[in-house]
Length: 81
Image (cartoon, rainbow, N blue to C red; front, side, top):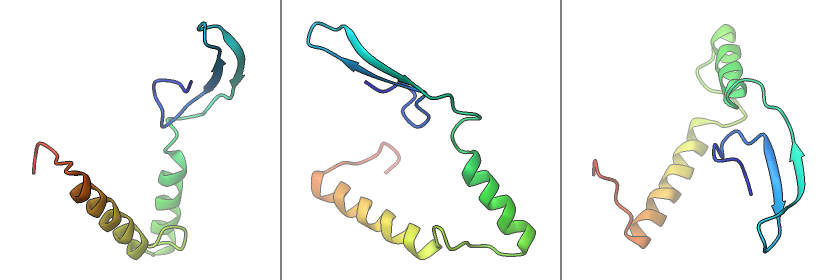
């Protein structure tokens, strides 16, 4: 079981069929888990770049197109659409 804030989990628990915690792993996360993205943007701005090599804009667009295609196939629509 992951923490309810899934994008920055600090614990991971193994739970048996009776609901007992069998094992727990704790790993504190500094910040909100998005500090790495913020640091990369800061680095890019300082260097005068608008895009990096880690996740270039073309790759981000390709991922979004894939996600849009999946949503279309399964019929998922967001309220604003």
